[in-house]
Length: 236
Image (cartoon, rainbow, N blue to C red):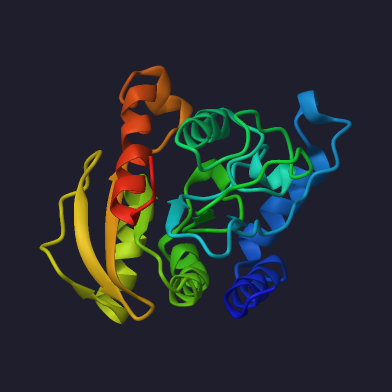
């Protein structure tokens, strides 16, 4: 295991053990105990959800937070709900994911050159973390960004993820171009301690609300990951 892989693994152990937000600790445990009827026989994860993917990734995906009956159930980012179905299909088409189908953390999924994390690691009520919860969780993302030497692209899935990453850049990095207003496909060139040439690439979140209303379509999401490969210097 490389030094970078060990650093990423150590961060995830701290994520899983985190109890910084009492309300989230209670909520995630309540959901795991009560369960949704469709998942009565499932063993819910019910803990903070660690990042998933390649610890040597050149592309980092940042989501909002685990879904109560998605990642909070399966224990893996974007796994077990409609958002994950969209995301992993797109990652598979772009060559980042070994398979399109996602079920749980034991389904054999492997990511290459991509790591998936989130602004908040515990499932929040109503999928809406508070400002205080976002602030409490942000150090984990700061650590990941510092550990990912050679990171070239940060794909922000939704405005909260985008705002969180930009907040970190203002503190720990520099802008090489003016910050782009959040919209699908917006790009901002930045520099971070371990990544002197990186791009924040904004995307609409693949939530069911966005996909069912065609705010986000599959070709739109595919275009994000085609661009991510270009920016990161990966072959098509």
